[in-house]
Amino acid sequence: MENYFNINLIFQYLPQLLSRLHITLLIVVSATVIGLFFGIILALFRVYKVPLLNQISIVYISFMRGTPILVQMFIVYYGLPLLLMKIGININRWDKLYFVIITYGLNAAAFKAEMIRAAIVNIPIGQVEAAYSVGMTKLQAFTRIIAPQSVIIILPTLGITLVGLLQDTSLAFTLGIIDVMGKVNAIAANTYRSLEGYVSAAIIFFILSILLEQLFSRLEKKLHIQKI
Amino acid sequence: MSFDISFMIIALKEAIKYIPITLVLAAIPLIIGSIMGTLIAVIRIYDIRVLSKLVQIFVVIIRGIPLVLILYIVYFELPKWVDTFSTKFNWTIHSKDINSIYIAIVAISISAIANISETMRAGLISVGKGQFEAAYSVGLTRSQTLRRVIIPQALPVIVPSLCSNFIGLIKGSSIAYLVAIVDIMNGALITATANYKFLEAYIAAAIVYWVLCACIEKGSFIIEKYLRTFTRGECL
Image (cartoon, rainbow over all chains, first blue to last red; front, side, top):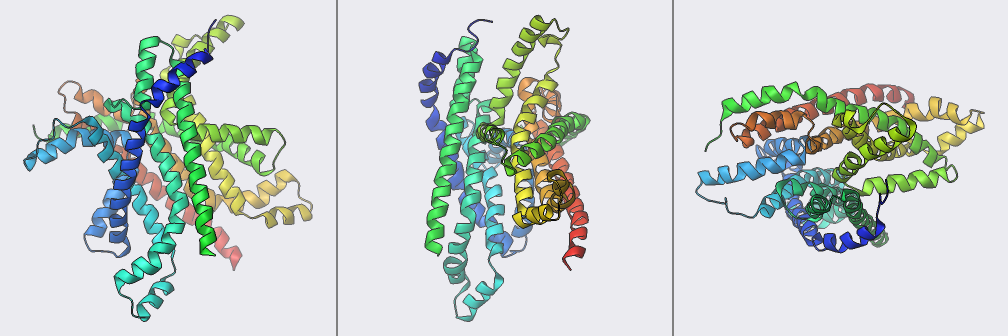
């Protein structure tokens, strides 16, 4: 088997793949923003045990954590237009990217909700009671006592979930999104040199994961210094 | 177009038939991952020269690459390797004889080894360095220390994360449909190819996965409770 692995091709493919990197990053960033927003709401429902909403969020989180993101993506893709059609909104002409972002956002929300809940529950109840006893309202106790401490607990796990999310975005190509992974498949189909393409994509994902990890461990160190 | 519940039940029945395939795709990597992962964790904890660095590089690289990429690389490259070796050594196995399910198992196992080794390492570290030293000081060997002191204490920590690893593997195994393996996901989809009711099929698949994962989670709780009963007595 001659010419089994051509390293020059990797340098040829890498720029092509990097040109689609913004799609991958767009999915990751927007899913994180959506996920954090809904995750905080879901976590608060669960921590303060809001009736009915608490049960709904338990079922929602369990579903999102118990099913593969691949299945969720297709359910959103086929189900959301059907659901919105009932209330008179037609989104059949939407770009597929929106469906992907919605799915990853909803999925991230469930994972982040659990993470945030764990961080909030982790703070001793005595601190909250102390805050109430000095006359703080519920909102003040949350924003001044609970939230700042939870952020420090959340950060390392947030880094891990972000790396997980980044790796999950590699499944978006099944819906026809041309992100890094979609581009690799296109290259592989065109040139029959699959290995080089996949290795280049692996390099990109690997470097991104390492960068994210480094970024979060730096942040963590900085916050820990401030805490002391 | 409206939601067809009766068709969803048909898809559900079809999907349930393929639970064993998904379980095989998740359980075999779990077993391989547990064995190799423990080995890697032990190598890294005892800081064995060269080997420790090598496995660390392996773990970091594999954890940085999405499972789909590993699956594709293995799927497209493993048959070529098998063919080269079989022509070299006159094996009777050729790439066309390999069922793609084995390829998926290999790919999922590679990622499972890296992920589970981290679980194992965290579990072993949680026991505390003093325990290792105490065991050495009473004259236990390395393997005795592990078997009699460390592992019994690490198990209650490891089992819950191992179960979440298993759930991750079950969810991860859904990508095996990309290489045309008929698992829960594909089993449900096959019923929909005739009438394009994909939404119902996907929801059926989701329900099966959900129930499966919920059962494993419950099982994990029960095992954890059982394991904790031993430590509780000792602490007092």
